Image (cartoon, rainbow, N blue to C red):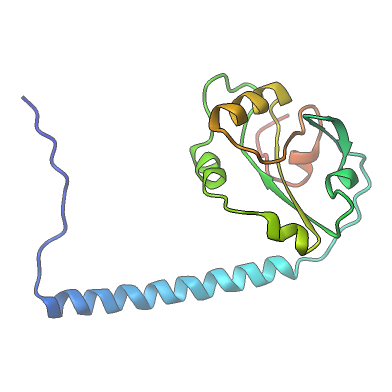
Length: 157
């Protein structure tokens, strides 16, 4: 018979715990500062003029990249990893991230549209979206270079 036990860290005195906690807190603060620096660098990335006419398929037909903006000044695109060949696999990280999305209505008040884009065909995306009970705007870039051109898909075409 096999028994599964969950490993636990050692039990120590309150003083030892506090010393370890303070060391970890210093690392957490540095990580937060680093994350803030990376986010600031992302916001300062230069812009590039987009010359290709990317087309995305959504539940109401095909839309251009410009149309994804819905007339707003900014567009946030979340690239959900969903390969066209995946019959049953779904990215657990992307799934968890979308599951954790809260109320995005404030984005519209900030002149911003949020969409999710994946390489899989729309039928696969819509089936998974229905299974998860999501109401997000999810578009297929199937057959286009969009994900490759923005270096969010690194596998060979």
